[in-house]
Image 1 (cartoon, helix red, strand yellow):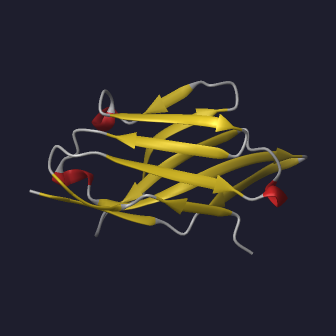
Image 2: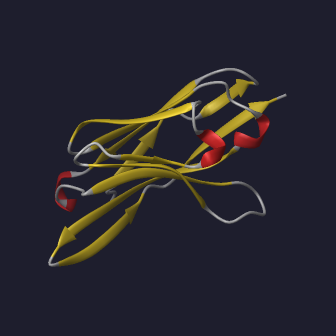
Length: 117
C-alpha cells in the first residue's frame, strides 16, 4: 500500500534546478513533520531538509541557501533545488512522521537526482 509518492527527479547539468514533490496518501493521517533525505552510492542516508506542520524548517549545511522546502497543505511537500552540484547526485526519499498514540515513520520509494558536471 503506497503511502508516500515522490516525483520530479531527473538528470540536470551543474548549476541547474529541479523541484521534487511528495504526496502523502489519506490513510497515514496528517504528518507532524515531512522532509527529504538522500542517499548517494556507498554512503549512508542523510537528512536534506524537513518542515513541520507549523512551518519550521531545518536544512543540512550542504544545501543551505540552495534548496528550499515547502508544504502547501498537510500532505504535500516540495523541495526546490537550485544551483545543483555533482555532489547532490543521490536517490532522494520523502519522509513523513505522524503521531497517533505513538510515532509512525513513512518513507517514499525514492527518486533519482543526477547532476552532471
